[in-house]
Image: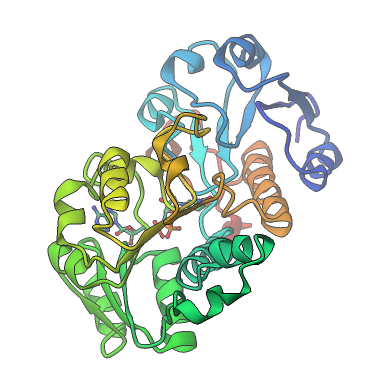
Length: 338
Ligand code: NAD
């Protein structure tokens, strides 16, 4: 590998990953902050970008990145990269699929359990000297309830397996893009249903779809009206999949039982967000994949994708594989062809 390669970090990444770049002879450029104003001039002489979620790499920013070869996301979502613009400029875009699955599954489970067992309420009651809250029968069980999964990919399917095995939950899912093979393999364990049925039958609705035009606000007023008044919604996917104003109304008017949110329409959540005043919601700051272990896994994998390209190999998880056919990249060899 040439030793003059430079990789821009709009936000810091873990020391293990920085060390891997250093060992490979790659220099890193750390932005002072991830704003477009700060990042734009730094793009002019880097070959790679390792991207967390603090900035969207737009076509306009790519116009300032004449030597950029590869944008490597530390996470799975690609909603903060204009992939079509990258493709037009023959920039490879990679993401990190599967590395955070188990951490997000654990987080969705934690939100589910914290809501049903009312952990924040119980904790606060003890601090207020109200031990007798234990007699009010407030917590609920998950055993035997119906888990509805919007999206049955890596995270959704793994959460379904865990809830079936741990709590004997009935698992239903809506995912129109699943192959017949996957549906057949799940026979007897998961029932695949239409979207309306998913909303109306779920005791726990957990969202695991990407943010796309078709999933934007897919959980809105109509969907919420179909849900049971005791149902809870868990969103660890992306905030705008839920119409937050409609969710606020449903929670405030007790049309649904509660919500556990890791993601929001506007991040960070501002101090005047009305969700903050509700007692039937639990929120975490987009931290599902940010466990100590997972951030290291994600950063190291993102580095591996960059180093693969720099050393003439096809990286894993390319979001725009069509660029591989261009003159710029047809020299790359597959890792299995070595
Ligand atoms: P995945 O690609 O494995 O699965 C997504 C599934 O959604 C696929 O099976 C796809 O067919 C399905 N789908 C797509 N459009 C749909 C639609 N309109 N209706 C129903 N199903 C649809 O992704 P994954 O690894 O399971 O991750 C799911 C989402 O979780 C990601 O897109 C990402 O946005 C989010 N995520 C969040 C965090 C976090 O920190 N909170 C971490 C990782 C992933």
